Image (cartoon, rainbow, N blue to C red; front, side):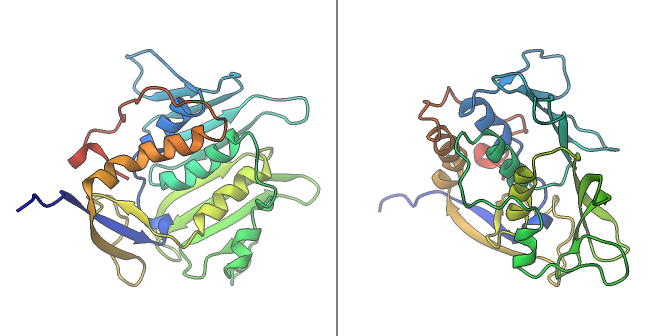
Length: 261
């Protein structure tokens, strides 16, 4: 009897904003291999640092129990002041990747939303019931607002929590001058109904309350799990028709089959 293909149990989780952070390699490896971002070669630094080919953008991953773990900063340009975006530790990597993918896309799609609120309006996010501005998700676990005034708009904040007056799970912050299309890419990924895949998700989920999240385990071929990142690298490299560079090992400690999403 031929051997049975090896499988891995994968949890498919919705809503995706409560799925936990995932593997940082989902962001860092494609930036390096498909987009030409250069990593720091200082082995003594306790964090990941990647610079864009033109040296205008910098992505850092610095574990900080009291602050944001991810920071994307961009230098000033003739038509835009310097800007930044930062993300808490439990921000799903798929959402952060939507921002970096949009930033590095040489040919942004014409139909992509440019208003950060547009993807949210389309699925029924609404203003807070008790004062305030911005929009709240139908389940009450995610909230977006923009500070400032109509004359002087300020920074954007996207906050997830386990219901009203409950603890914060993660927060994303976008500076006042962050391109709106990048924030819109984030909000579009935030409300994407497709579940995200996680391995060994139990200790990383903010809650297992079935009234809040849906977690569907499924056996997936190990080859498919291991190849997901490689497929992503090649897909992004194809945008420029530049062959991807050699594989880079994930900065995250290896798990079963060396891949966590």
